Image (cartoon, rainbow, N blue to C red; front, side, top):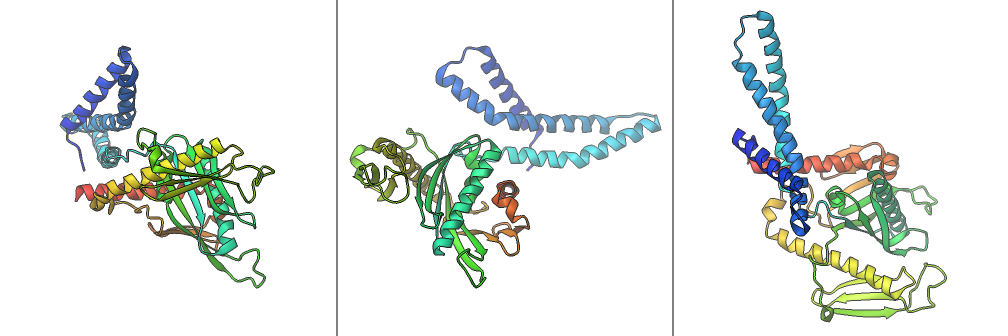
Length: 356
């Protein structure tokens, strides 16, 4: 998908207008916020568009150059060859920069990990995944705050929910939703047999209160006494909160805080994210054909990755990529390679779909 020179000039003109408006000092309030958002979205496109325009202009000048000096002609021919080699890749980068973006890409995300098949081993694996995302988030400069957790007796998690905040969180984590499978010898296995267990990961973009408005009449709120691991206050106060959203039957519980009010606030945060996900799923269902181009559907039942301990490898089944760096992936440092590959594959498929 190669853009015309007229389209490049339009991009440069629009970007120049935004720069001038922001520099004028006349924008305030919502107008300033909107212009700043438009500027941030257009800046990477305008930057690459300017590079493409400059390379095309230089190529045209060199090709039209008439010089009787053989040495100058030879130098010009070398530059023409270089530009012809580099320009298609720069044009491809521009096409990728102009692909429609998910409106939720820059949002924080709610990360939910649940132990699946495999009992205690699945709960331990869920904890491994949580630590992996914590370390990856730290590497990205993000902040992870645990919202709720249901610990298992062996030290893992039956379920853990966390809020991940930072720049571009959802854009990087959205392809992590699905079933993650582990193959290893459990610590409780005396015979040395390899077991297969699984955990489910869901990554939900975090909405604002404007995105999802919840009516009090649609909520059923139950207060009860917390149970399980959680400190001395457990079983001493009625602080645990269960919220049921009646129209959708979505149920959220939180019991990690001493304060009933804090538990309610966290539960509402999770509920809002799940309702927003439901709204997005319904909207995207109407665009099913467009979603076929994506690397993954985001379906939680889709098996997406296998972590094989005996062979020290991680395989992402959607893009048939295997890394023999399991320890690094679990430490978060190697996870970026998988995530970047998934993003690149998704961009390539969407480009191909647009060209088709």
